[in-house]
Image 1 (cartoon, rainbow, N blue to C red):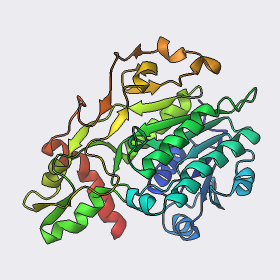
Image 2: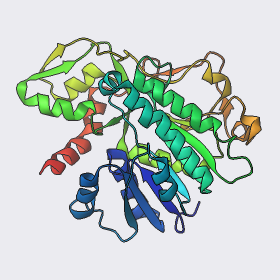
Image 3: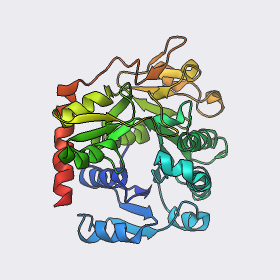
Length: 336
């Protein structure tokens, strides 16, 4: 895929993922234009003036994914939409359920409608492991958003618009993640963990960005792309970040799981395994692109699941230390 003549719009472009994605895209792929679409004027101003994003290829659009009219204007002439805008804090979504629905579900529907109406070539939405067998409202809204994205390929009809998703685990160092929390807690000598048995999938922001780019370049429409990434124990993370600190168990929060899933047993029936990722094909794949991924990989075995507990890749304390060192340095530099 040649990006040099592409116009790319990023919803939630001022967030952790959005900024990293835009930086990699500008530095390595040289698109014709990148549109930062977000509702926070201050964050846009900071990106432009002090964040290193004063680039003639960038346009800053104030807008909310809840506003379909604004999205209709913003997506006009756009080739690729990366949909990363979301309300993602689990406790906030539990306490503000309708707001989560408006942004994560209805906002995604607006992105789909505007993209199809304006002939956008590719729409790639970011999802999460919490969308698999969800027990919290955030996960439920992301599951609904996934289904909208996948099934809306049928809406495109004879148009060129193709829509797909990526689904991955915790992104180390992203806004609201546990690493910045542990950094703040470290001077006190006490790190808080909700349950000592807890495990999580882990990947870096850089890995997430490059996986999204790979998905955009290879998507045919209707897929959910899942990377092969390592798991880690929360207790090992605490030991890696503060070996001498006391670990205080505070109890699982509402809507929190002990272990996360990236592929459920029911999804396994349409899942193809490749070297570095899985591709979950829609149940009705033959409706719009057939079974092309089956020629590139192998179906997973019956009863397969992909969870942070049964993963074959694990980061131990030493591995976590090596993994988070550059992220800690980056966070420290950002605060200077």
